[in-house]
Amino acid sequence: MTSISGRSPLVAAGPKRYANIFRVVPANLELLVAVVGTLGLIRDSLTDPAPVACVNLHSLFGILLWLSVIARFHHRLNQLLPMRPADIRAFARHLSRRVYLLLYGLMFLNLSLGVMQAAIHGAFVIRAEHFQCYLADGVFAVITIHALAALWLRLRGGLGNGRLTYREPASPKRQG
Image (cartoon, rainbow, N blue to C red; front, side, top):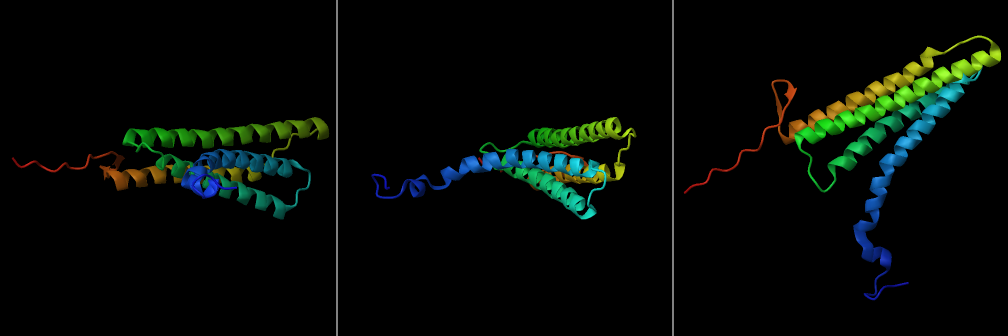
């Protein structure tokens, strides 16, 4: 199947056809992070989970969370409108909020699974050591967010007095 120009429609579309893919990937990656975290907590809540499988789910959760943060950052930096320093700070706060919300959701799920086990077995037991892995992954993701924001500000304007500030580039003086 060819178009009027003699080229196939896929070749004629060029890079525009990939634009939607890069918009969808960060959202789907965040959904995948939530699913892996949920599956990991469910696996941890079983009476005798296999330690190797749980470690792999914890590692997969951490890697996917970190990749979703990087993908969101990359997606936002490559939008048409350039980001101002206030925008990067607001974006970093927004992205941090998403990570915190995911961790709060997993914490609620962890408590809910403990309550359901208490109803079945009669003893309320929550394994905190499993959730600490998720918490460490979340802290690493938030540190990555703030490091990327500081790096962007450093490359775009600079860090002044240890605070995230932005300096306008010097405009050339007119001779006249």
